Each structure stands twice: as structure tokens, then as C-alpha cells.
Amino acid sequence: MHPKHECLLTMQKETVIPDYIFQISWEVCHKVGGIYTVLSTAAQTLQRQHPDHTLYIGPDLWKGSDHPLFKEDSALAATWNEVTTALPFGVRAGRWQIPGEPICFLVDFAPLMERRNDVYAAMWRDFGVDSLQAYGDYHEACMFSLAAAMLAEAIVGSPRGEGKQFVFQAHEWMSGCGLLYVRKHCPEVGTIFTTHATSIGRSITTNDKPLYDYFEGYQGDQMARELHMEAKHSIEKQAALHAHCMTTVSEATDRECAQFLGRRSDIILMNGFEEAFVPKDTDFRKKRRLAREIMVSMANALMGTQLKERKTLIVSTSGRNDFRCKGFDVLLSGLSRLENEGMLSQDVLAVIAVPCWKKGVREDLKHRMEEGIEPYYSPLPHPYITHELHNLDEDRIVATMRACHLTNDGKSRLHVMLIPSYLDRADGLLNLDYYDWLTGSDLCLYPSYYEPWGYTCLESIAFGIPCLTTQLSGFGQWVNQSVGHPSTLADGVAVVERTDSSYEQTAQAIAQTIRDFMTLSSEEKRKIRRKAKRLSKQALWKHFIKNYYTAFALSLSKRKP
Image (cartoon, rainbow, N blue to C red; front, side):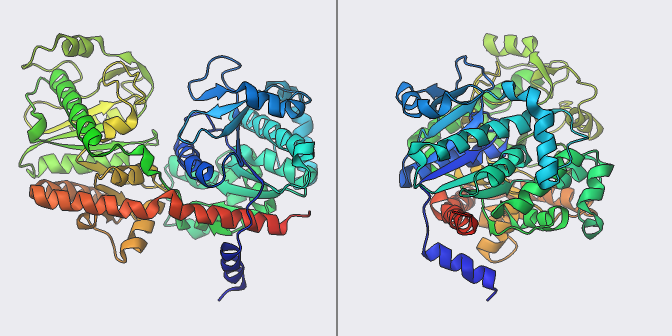
């Protein structure tokens, strides 16, 4: 056995629990993407096992106004007042309004912006971080994480921190500046850097370059210059190299860390889930029926169709609007094949819930839905999108739908509906949150090209909804390992092959998977749903959180007390 693995196994047996764990992320109390789901779902497990030992620090983007995800706590504020009042920026203490309600600090980093050039000079001098080409969100991210690190430093150096053990876990390059600050000024604190996706890997993909066929030929620093990513890549690389413990979320991303950052992960921190987010049987059935009725009613009003909720197969996809990374291109091609090859034995409603540059609600659709006079015999203009966009003619999803002739001309049993809005109960039409909407799907489709983990897939099967993903996703790789073979729809998750040269085959596999699911009996579908649900239980945080404790122990073992 490799000495490194022996060391990790020993640490798992002799876990050292820090007195306090700082969790630093731009997405603490700020819902942007998958990192929010990682932190917010893990919080309940950490709180249950070690109440109030984890201190979350996020950006105060609401500047003292009411925050829907954060509740100030006067008792906490008084407890930490001696620490926070001495800092050169504002700090709010309270509780993150998620299951577990962990302690949370929001830092107003704006006062540090005028000092950023001095900070960048120090990072260059101490760690070789090149910030000369910095632009956009780099400045805000660095000053936020610096403020988080200064708060952590103040807590460590206060009477409350005397004799205590601390771990500082920084998520993504946005927290790299803070990690490097802690490494220099607080050598007694164990540091962990967690990259959820490398900046170079994501940038290669979003710039339509082939990531996998030429993977070994890409060099991180050279690609950073070519893609104008020097500053972000530099701080990410140095945070990875100088952290006591380097982590990422999957074997797929660990390969990128070695290639682009020059360091493999010490531990893989796979992303788990909490059952508390899944409604129980009766509640689930009510939510599912409501979601399906609303989606079918919306589709009928939009397209002038007479779909019936009980007779319509609803397939869906969702996630961040990364057109190529999330595989929206090949998904739409797969749907096009489903239609063109006459593979439909029943009506199919394909719902794409992806935030776009939304202008607002379509008033003509809203009027029809409020009027509620069905059936409708004529479609509305653009009968494939539920909200108005600022850039309808330039949006890549819309353009691809048109190119694939997925515009609901009334002659097909396939109906495609784009909901270009966040599902937060306030989109103006659907008015459901994401999880309530998800319950209405029969099959979820996530044919990702670049997906370090794949939370949408895990959420899907946690709700008992079978899904499709690819072997390029961290989640797909984990599923294949868990079931012991290339997973198929019969296992609850169809893991299809995708490479830089398999576009046509992947599109055909998507179409065939939908067709296969459509032809199953009701009992066969129930059996697959049960398998999906059972598989998700292997990915609960109560199983995956042990890797976090191993990372905590490793970081503490390498610090300088």
C-alpha cells in the first residue's frame, strides 16, 4: 500500500475533530451554483454531529438589508462582538436559514478594495501569485476572502481561540487569497483548499476546445495565458500548492488538478445529500401531482395543445446555463432524433429549466393561464419559451432548438418547453421552487460534457427519479463504481458514453433511453425508481462526511502549532 494511503487510513481511524472549522465560500448565503448545494446540505450533518463547531463566512452582498437566507442573531453578535468590532470592515453574525441553521458571518469587504494593490503585491512577494492581468470578479473575490481570513485570524487570536484547534477550508479560487493569508499569518491553523472545478478545465470547455482528446497536451500556465485567465489560474494554483490539504470532488477533477495545478488531491470529497430535503410519501405525491398539472397546463396554454397529465411523459433537464458543459447541445440533438425517427408512442413534454437573460413574464401566456379557459386550439407566438428574453435571437439554447426544428409546430407528439428562469417561487408563472418542480419529472437528462460532480443527477435519484448522465461526470463515474459495471437505465441511472468524437452516438443514446423508458410497464418504472432511490442512499452525507474529517485531520497534522 502506498504510504500516503496508509496515512489516510490511520487518520480515518483516529479522527481529530477541530474545535472550530471555518468554511469560506462566495456561495455562503448566496445561491449561485452547485457549491451552495454542497455547503447547505452538508451543514445539517456537521451541525448534528458537532453543533456550532462549523463557522460559515460569506460575502455581505445585501449591505445590512433584510436577507432571505440569513437571520441576524443578537446573542451571537454579542458573543463575538469583541472580535468583530476591531476589524476594519463590517461583520454581521447570525444563522444561515437552511436545515441545521449553522452559525454564519457575512463580511462587508468593500472597505478593503482600496487596499487591493498592496494585497496583490504581498501575494506576489510571498507566494508568486500574478494578479497583473486581473479583471472583473477577481477583485471582489480576493477582497471577500481576505476579509474572511482576517475574521478567522481575529477569532483564532482572541481569548475564545486560546488552546483551540482550527481548520480553514477555502472553496474554489474565489477563496484562494484568504487561504494564502492564513498560511502566512496563522501557521497554527490547518488549511484545506477545495476546487470544485478547475478554472482552466472549465474555460477550455466553454471556449469550445476539445478537453479530453488533447488533455495530456494542455499545460495550465500556458492555457491561462491563451484564455486570458492568468490571475484566476495563478491564485488557484498557488492555493492548491500551499494548502496543507488539497481536495476536490471527483476523480475526474483530480486528474485536472494534477495536469493544470501541479498537485493531485490528498482526498476526494464527494458531494453528498440530505434526505431531509426530500418530501415524504404523501407530501411527495401531492407535490408531484401539482407540479405535473402546472407544467402540462402551461404547455397547453403556450402551445395550443391538449396534453393530459396522466398520459404525458415528462422528461426534464436543469442546471446552470453552461451550454456546452451541461450538454444542452447534444440533448437537443437527441430530442430531435426522437421526433424524426418516429420513436414516440405517447406524448412527451421535454422541459428545459435553465436560467437565461430573462426580461420578464410573457404576458400573453400569463393571461391565458389566469383565464384558465381550456382547451386552446392555437399556439402563442414562439410556442416553446415561457418568458421573454433580452436576447431571444442570440440565445444558444433557443438557436439550437430552432436549428433542430424543436419549435412545436403541432405535428409531433414531442413538445419542448424552455423555462428560462430560476425556480425560486417567484418566476411569475410556474411559481414553484426547484425541488417541488423536480418532483413532476418522470426522467431527468443530464448528458454533461464537463461536470466535476453532478448535483442535479444526485438530486434527481434522491427524489426517486431515474436519470441519464455521462461517464465524463464525476457522478457518472461514481455510479459506475457503485454498481460495479457501466450503469444502465435498469440500474436507476443510465451512464452513456461521451467523448470529444462521440457526439452523434451520444445523441442517439439519449433518444433511445427516452424510448426505452417510454415502453416500460408501470411496474418496471416503479422498480427503476426504487433502484434510483436506493442508489442515492449510498451518497448521503452520513457516508461521505467521513472524508471531510479525514481532510481536517490531515491539515492539522501538517500545520505548525
